[in-house]
Every structure is written in structure tokens, then in C-alpha cells.
Length: 603
Ligand SMILES: Cc1cc2nc3c(=O)[nH]c(=O)nc-3n(C[C@H](O)[C@H](O)[C@H](O)COP(=O)(O)OP(=O)(O)OC[C@H]3O[C@@H](n4cnc5c(N)ncnc54)[C@H](O)[C@@H]3O)c2cc1C
Image (tube, rainbow, N blue to C red):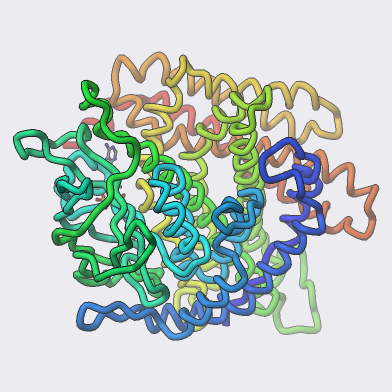
């Protein structure tokens, strides 16, 4: 059976040693933070994920969700686990205290969500989407929604969803058909169909608050294939009055659940909105500025999507972590062949799989990705907090975290899937069959590359929007930040880390220049380069994280003998990234600068 142990040592290393959270007193939510509190949260989350969520991961995959007579039932055990999750308060860890949350830094929530996803991705998505939904409601909702609805979502009594996708549109939301028409009382009536809605229906909560985008028809009753009248709405499954009283069932019906490759305990629903009562979110249209303010609530929607993108990036890490752990255990049990340098255990008929260089290569690939990516995710989340803090470095921090969001979503989920696949390879045929459970990680983790904006679209966002915004301020800030750190650490001891990252950074700079010169003249050149460029940026920035961690590990190795194996492991994983991932950079640059001509020849 699959195993899972939460990566507590690594989180302690990141929180207490690398980022020193306890010293970030001037950031919102950090003032009362002590290392004991951080450790308590991590330990309790680990225990919950290992003992409650992981044991129902396999059974949930085998049983799947049920849909009978318009009602969704989740597999055995999910309800009880969800109840326990809510009672422990996990859903409100970083939510504002005024609404019943614990107001702790988002970095802790990210850590908990990684653990929960490794243990049981299907389960973790129900509360994960609820957090994104209540954050959007806090940002854009009316006071009565914050008073009566948000606290119930934070406590987990009610859940939330994100409803964007329709049969005719996923990426291209201009094409959406769902309409919302205003009533004299200021509410709207919504009609249309949304598909692929995660947690769209379930039997875990009494009510579900759907966060929906839809078009408001123009004065002629028409909608158009553009975004000009797309608005953001709240649509409860059961109606809620402004006094908080729950009323009748709203006109939202579940049309079915999808049969799919993975995350089978997660109900992916078709939702039919049939004259559903909807509340428009965001400021009211300003007379005379109608067109501009028609889409006023969309900022809340984009905020929700950005939070969800970071969450999906964490799913990539989580997939890699749990797959790696299981493969590591397996290669210490299975005996196949002999070590190339001579038998490691001559008295046994064969050596353990772990002796083989190619097995070690696959495992180190997973590990150096997972730990490097985790550091980058935490650094980015910290930057988000700095960006909102008003500190002198706030603007740069906001630019950097904004730039990293598509990289984290796409690079981490590509690498997470790669890691799950390599972990399965370590099992040989015993990974492909179901008995050992590693194939579930491959199936579950595959969706991460697709939803929340498919990875190709994330790359287009990076290249098409984020690079050029504010005169290229974000890539300039990144190149300067990494370049300054490298220049300040050119010691002999750090040369094996600083020199490769510097080479990678030079290629990133050249690729950025190439895009600036060619992308505007020929947009196909930018489109053809986008995915390679995103991967290049991911490799370089994770490489920089590894250089920083290697510096710390070198210092601690001598100073902290009891933990020497931990720091030695860090140095090995750091060297792997430098020797095996950074060399991809010149190859990616060559591919980027090949342009789009050949690619566009495909008819
Ligand atoms: C299990 C599951 C759960 C989901 N959960 C939710 C949810 O909770 N809420 C929700 O709203 N949606 C959800 N989705 C939908 C998901 O977000 C979409 O499937 C995704 O955004 C892609 O849209 P699409 O499937 O329509 O693909 P399409 O938009 O048809 O795209 C197909 C492919 O073309 C690529 N592509 C599209 N446009 C471009 C372009 N301009 N340049 C380059 N490449 C392009 C895309 O990257 C993609 O690879 C879920 C989907 C699944 C399968």
C-alpha cells in the first residue's frame, strides 16, 4: 500500500532557517508568529494528513463519486474526514480573524495544502476551492455576504466553487453563453451551463456557494463574443437572505459528474443554471462609465484565479513528493541485478534497486525538483505578503510574485507529473499495475497541467503579458535580484552552485532580449517560444533557490553535526540541479531563438 510522511524537516528548514519567518514581524499576520506555533501547525497538519486523509486516498480512487437521481455522493470516508478537517479549523488557517479565521500567514496554508494534496488530492480540492471562493467574496462581496456567508465558508460548514468553463469555452472565455439578467430588486436571474466544475456538488456540506462568471446582455438584450459584459456573481445552491436565513433550493441543478482519468473522489460536475438567483459582485456600474464598470467584479475573479494558480502549483509539488517517497521505499525493498562497481551485498542473490545509477538519477530528479520548487513557492508566497505590506521593497516583491505565478503553476505541474512518471518507472511493471498504488499519482497529477489555465496558456500569459508590463519591470527585477545575489556570493565554496546559475541567468537574459526583439514583430515567434521560455525561467529561478539553500547547508553542515545528513542531502540535491537541469538552459535558448517558421509550416 502507498505511504506518505509529511515533509516536516524540509518545512522547518524553509520556515525557520532559510526564510526566518519569526523575524518578519512587520508583515501582516507575522507579528505573533513564534517557531513553536509554526511547528504546532505543521505537526498537527502532518498527523491529520497521514492518519485521516491518506488512508482513504486509495479507496476513494477505487470507489469514485456516485450520481443518482440528481444527487452526488462522495466515496466512503470523505464525509467523516471533511468533518474532522472542519473541526480542526484547517479551512480558516489564513482567513481574517474578523470572519472566524486564524489569520496566520498564507505560507502555512500553502504548506498544509501541499500535505493534504500529497495525502489525498481529491479531498484537498474541496476545501481548497472553498478558500479561493471565500477570499473572492471577502474582496468583492456585499457586507451581508461577509457577515452571513463568509464565516460559514471559513468554518467549512458551506463550500465554494469556481464556475468558469462551459461546453463551448474553457480557455477562450469570450465565447461564454451563460447570461444573467437584472431584476427590479437588484438580483439577477442566471441561465446557462457550466461544465467540469470541481466540487460542483457533493454531500459534505449543507450549502455550496458558486462563484460564477456570466454575461449581462446589453440594452438590446444581446450578448457578444467578447469580455466587455462579463461579470462575476455569487450563486448559492440554497438561497440565502440578506439576514442570513437559508431559504429554498436555488435554480442550480447538477446535470451529471464526469468519468475521468484521476482524482476520482473529487466530483467534477455539470451545473445547469435555470433562472438561478444570482448576486452580482463588485462595485455598481457608474453612470456615464457604463462600459468600463460593467466588468467591475472581474478583479475579484482574477484574484481568485491567481490564488488558485498558486494552489495548483503546490499540487505539482505534492504529486512529486508522494510519488518520490513511495519509489524511494520500493527501491530499498526490491532486489534486481548487481551494482556496476561490484555486488553491494554479495551474500544476497541480487542487490537492491537503489544501487543502480539510473534509479538514483530518477529519484534525485524528483527530489531536487520537489525541494527546490517548495523553496520557490514559499519565497513567492512571502513576496506576496511583502507586496501587500507597504514596506520599501513592496513594489519589487509584488512584481516578482506576479511574474512567478504562471511559472509556479505550469513548471511545477509539468515537473510534478514528470516526477510521478519517473517514480512509476522505478517500480517497473509493478508500477504500471494498480497493486502498488503509484499509478494513481500519475493519473491524479495529470490534471494539474490542464486546469486553472492549461500550461501552454500560462506560458502565453508569462510571455505575452507579464514580461512586457510596466516596461519590462518584472523581468528586470528578477534578473537584478538573482544577479545581485550571485555577485555577492562568488566564493570558492559556492562556485559549484553560483557559476551554473550565473550561466543559466545569462541564457534567461538572452532569451528575454530575443523575445523583446522578435515577439512584437512576429507574435508567432513569441507563441512558439513561450513554453520553452517558461521552463527556462523555472529552471534558473529554482537553481537560484538551490544556490541559496546550498549556502545555508554548507554553513550548517559543520555547525550542526546531529543534522549533518539532512544538510548533506540538500547539497547533493543542489548539485543534481546544477549538473542535470541547468544544462537544459542553452538548449532551451536555442529552441526559443529558432523562431516559429518551421512550427507554423504544420498545416
Ligand atoms: C477534472 C477537471 C476539473 C476542472 N475544474 C474546473 C473548475 O472547478 N472550474 C472551472 O471553471 N473549470 C474547471 N475545469 C476546466 C479547465 O479549467 C479547462 O478544461 C481548461 O481551462 C482548458 O479549457 P478547455 O478544456 O476548454 O480547453 P481548450 O480551451 O479547448 O484548449 C485546448 C488546448 O489548447 C490550448 N490553447 C487554447 N488556447 C490557446 C492559445 N491561444 N494558444 C496556445 N494554446 C492554446 C490549451 O492550452 C489546451 O491545451 C476543470 C477541468 C477538469 C478536467
